[in-house]
Amino acid sequence: MAVLARRVRPDDWTPIGVEALEANAMKVVRSTGNRSVIAGPGAGKTELLAQRAAYLLQTGGAPAPRRILAISFKRDAATNLAARVRQRCHRIHAGRLDSLTFDAFSKGLVDRFGQALPRRWRPRPDYEILFPTDAMYRSFLDELPTPPTAVGSRADIMAITVKRFERGHLLGSPLPEGGWPATNPEQWAADRFWQSSLHEGNATYLSFPMLGRLAELLLRINPMARRALQLTYSHLFMDEFQDTTQVQYDLVRTIFLGTDAVVTAVGDNKQQIMRWAMAMEDPFAAFDADFGAKRTPLYNNYRSSPALVRIQHVLAQALDAQAVEALSKTAGTVPGDSCAIWDFSTPQVEAERLATFVAAEMKAHNLAPRDFVLLVRQKAADYAGVLEPAFRRGGLPLRNEAASMGKVALQELLAEEASTLLVYVLRLAMTRRAGRYWTECQAALAALRGISTDDEEMQAKLAREIDAFALDLLRRFPKPVATAAEARVLVDSILDFVGRDRLIAVHPAYAQGDWFAKVTEATTLHLQASCDGQLAWTDALDAYEGLHAVPLMTIHKSKGLEYHSVIFVGLDDGAWWSFAGDQIEATAGFFVAFTRAKQRVVFTYCPRRGTRTRIATLYNLLNKAGVPTISIG
Ligand SMILES: Nc1ncnc2c1ncn2[C@@H]1O[C@H](COP(=O)(O)OP(=O)(O)OP(=O)(O)O)[C@@H](O)[C@H]1O
Image 1 (cartoon, rainbow, N blue to C red):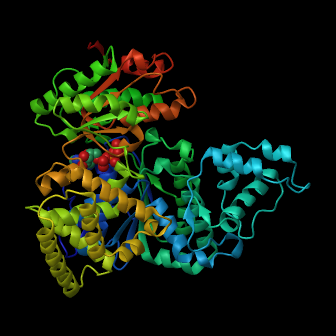
Image 2 (cartoon, rainbow, N blue to C red):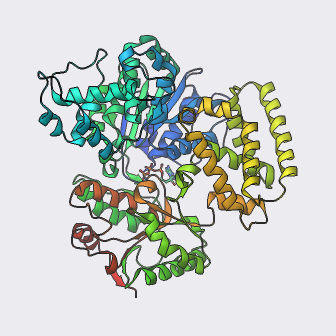
Image 3 (cartoon, helix red, strand yellow):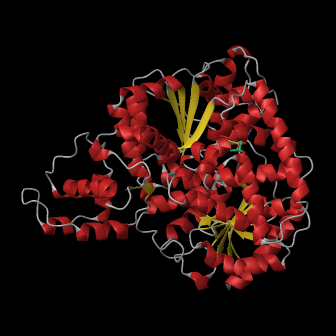
């Protein structure tokens, strides 16, 4: 892979790491105007952003010292894009991409500029993150005093529904600098919520959407801060744009609308599964209208076999009658049905058969455990309780990625910077062939220490320090840790070396409340558990990352990921109890699950878990696509 530090002429630039891009993707990569890319699953939308970053950084399209800002929804998506760009670009170039989540971006802004907000909107500097629930909003509304007569009555307040309160009033529109005129009960109650969260408790408590609203306000009223961002970023990328909330969109609009920044938004409306979390009805339409973006479709599917793409199209049409069938660019490699519904008599039989099936498929197609995923709609722990023992008996560990380590979900922990760094450092120090980890450690530590990519002297000094630390670590911990105390000492040593203060300074989430303590605790617990019974560090670290375990996760967590085979456990009314409530979102969830597969999708059904009448629509779609139902045992 060409990783050049020198400038490449735009005409000479070719995609890196893939053979070719389809014509429209290439147009977007090279484009100098705002673009919205709506394309189906596996079309290479994330890949397109990575290629565009490489193009802009290598050709000078994003001229130094200006930077590219990439905003994603999930931390792993943000890390994934940054890693793809690092693989494709020289570190001098890759260092000019900031890949962040929306939450981290908003929070960073409030942390940097929040104290300049007018008093009524100013959080205390040591504010805490609030994760509000419907019950919490309800009790807040129930406990409000009677509003002023001119505003309304107590009965008016009691009549406010939680959803309307949160979406329509608390977060529904940009914050007015001088506060809302108290003209109606909802707005009065929303203002009470803001003021009590900001000023009236022991601490300031703010949810991430509230931080987004504050960030938008502070940039709207502070032209210097806005200008600083506009000067910093020449380009903005937004992935999974279909799930953008109004809060996020307003923030982006306030910063970038009418500036010279070029915005690229990619997504797939059929994969919109965050409407419950306030995703906009049609963010692409708003973006095209406001930013004058040119809409560019993509037609290929690089992930899934032709047989799966054909079935995907039937599902896609249920979500969008205009959907165009994608062109599969991947050959089918499994014989027989690429998709089937398997009926089982009991969950125990199901678990045994699935374990045998995965083991046999691994052998037949030379696959690894992580080429498979077991997806469930919710309550992963309940399914894991039956599946895990059966897989263990079959010699295959199964790992519930939704399970918690201390107070952090495993999947979340593995995307945490502190945990990732620990793995990089340990792989570098304790294992052979750690070249890749050298690069990752050096890049991560240089970023934490603020060493610029072209400061050769400081980079060399850092390399020597890493080297000495790694040698010392191996001398002190030649074997995987055996006790909780040892795990703690090891984690502490690495954090001391990395620098807790630096981590906290660069990752704002760590500065808030006790999140850093929770992540450190979870890292220590998980390290100790992963070392249990292992003789070599490689095995312990493989266990930490779950490299040899079949993952089990919910559909929501599978977004953006891909597997050779997807086994969806429990296609029944029990798991999809809310199907009738929001049929479109549920079907979109089903579509997301289906489209994670490259070669095979298996749905399982067991009458003990529920009937299949309420979700007959999903079964009808599969029937329409010719998916057979097979009675397994
Ligand atoms: N031009 C290309 N040539 C070959 N492979 C590609 C190309 N573009 C993407 N891929 C591969 O296809 C797969 C899907 O790409 P990517 O994850 O970027 O798709 P996506 O459109 O973001 O998918 P989704 O919306 O389903 O998450 C990845 O394995 C990626 O490496």
